[in-house]
Image (cartoon, rainbow, N blue to C red):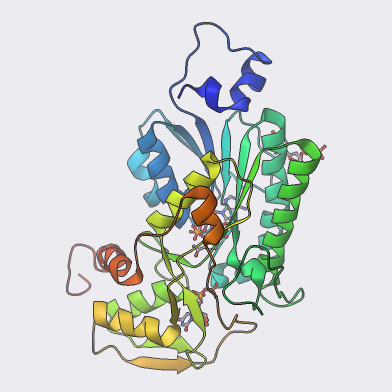
Length: 343
Ligand code: NAD
Ligand code: UDP
Ligand code: UDP
């Protein structure tokens, strides 16, 4: 569809309500904050492939140029090194706001910065959305449910979050980001979308980011023991990245604000996950127990009824299908071209 049928932004910014004659655009102009990161870079691939113009805004805290450099030279792609905590002026139709470290190791590294990114960064991107009339999508998290007392988690559940714990910079940061998003929607009429993302894995994850899937895969490939924290009976539900990206785009293009859980309901204990990693990479991989981290949620599994009903979305790639795709990427990055050991 031409842009003037799909977007308020073009109307408001460029013509005060009228499309100037002779100006036609094929795709949308889309900002992806955090677009050099794991999820963001996969989203950018899909948007570019669809014909949109994409501006990635990233401070490279956990993102990498390597994730997007295959788009360098494409006139529909721009990369801006910018911290969303600082204001930013752009003219765009849609904003996918992903900028925020996602691994517990990364977001605990500088917790005050994590809060600022979630609160001030989200405020700035909402201010931008308001100024240009862009549609804004927030990537929130299943962490807003904290250590949940309801299982599986439904969007109507308000959560069980420790406001003063070591994970609060992220949990409470995202909760505030959701609040800001809804207040800009109600108060300023900004078109918004909220996704609550559950644990996602896939190619391009940071190899040493401390998340369980990246840890286990890297450990098994390097012939190290898999580090299981606590008793390994805590659960998570793991979603392959292409399923998430499909969900995010459906949410953005659809008519519903949300929040929507986007996750794969397949639930695994960490010991079960270790077993799948053993089966996929190395049946002889050892398991080593380590003390668990503070405030670790005991279980997590999305109820995705809402996304199924309203977005027509559900994940397609289960763990046993998705893990090998990630292993190929990790193997190449860890060992270079050599498949059987560091060169
Ligand atoms: P990631 O760390 O790979 O990507 C985050 C990106 O944001 C990186 O490129 C990083 O450099 C950038 N960034 C961080 N702070 C910034 C700042 N202040 N200004 C500009 N850029 C900044 O993580 P990801 O897994 O791709 O996560 C993307 C989003 O999805 C995050 O908002 C995260 O909270 C959310 N999410 C992810 C998961 C998951 O399992 N991957 C689960 C729930 C929510
Ligand atoms: N902002 C931005 N880009 C814009 C418009 C606003 O970064 O294009 C920032 C702005 O600097 C402010 C925040 O977004 O800090 C909120 O903007 P808003 O206009 O909603 O509030 P105000 O500026 O009135 O506080
Ligand atoms: N975990 C583990 N071994 C690791 C890393 C993490 O057993 O090497 C556990 C961690 O204690 C948590 C779960 O795996 O219970 C998921 O942790 P992750 O950091 O991947 O994401 P979270 O869902 O906690 O944000």
